[in-house]
Image (cartoon, rainbow, N blue to C red):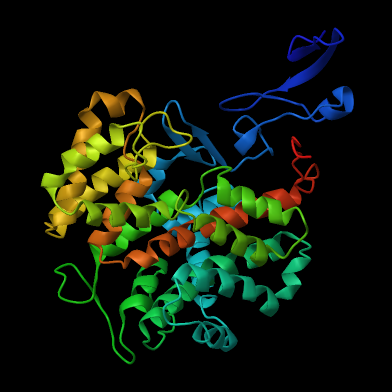
Length: 427
């Protein structure tokens, strides 16, 4: 009997089965159960895959107990503070941070790939003006597969890099187009003289034929503090291990579908209010609460086990400590309040709820700390980003994570088509 293994005994027939324990470089080791069905004739029942590792990965590490998140081994706090979103994109894709020359080359490539085929403009124009930007964005990304069908059969690393750069560059453009379509105003083409995050704000806010400058005093349409804040949000959303939307991307990838179709599926999965759509729900709930004086009533409802009401933006499926991304955003929120002179009633409600949750025994005992969705919603509101664009912002940040995970899956010789089994209890 191997020392680094687990033995399972079937009490029905006293048979024993041995399975190797595979070491992880960080975090939890795993039991290799690939032959379990063949050995026993049984399936493992694990709703939500809460105890199942579906892949081997080198991209992102999470320790939910310690409240730790790392991209390629580097703590998220360092990346958010010291590196730009494009540097993080390069890190996720290539496995290391870029040199100055590599970053310049990568930045230029992203800028020049930000334009989309005119046919996609026509597609977006065909949607009803009241369509949610996420519905338009998911459809437009799926349509990219018709313009770049050759990406179905990638042969070498340069082809993978081109495909990844294209999706990272074009999603902000499509997101901005979807937003402007919802307002019935003309689209603004990318400006290759602008940085990644600045360009997205420009495409959302500019008037046709007009010029927008970055200023420190805020007299123009784009402030440097806004660019820096949104860039940080993109970094914090860049990847998050095997979450629901990433699992969706990998699942679609396992069928051999086009990479952009897999990304489109990830966008649709992210839209759910239990996932990326939660940041929209945070603001909607703050608006529903309406006034600081109403907070005690809603705190009492949240504590009542017989009441279906739940405070949005608190607690996390993985983190049983303070979400490290939320820590970064809390500092950013306080900074923005000072630099932008924020004093809105929603911010006052949010900060009052936050203070209660961080001090109240009920929330502390249940690990119901404010999460990334809570702070993201409040910060994006402060940046005057429309609520229906909150999840699209998430998509822009997460696009690099999805495509990196897709590439890793395709390169893994052990990858198989996703095919969970079931426990049948019908007639």
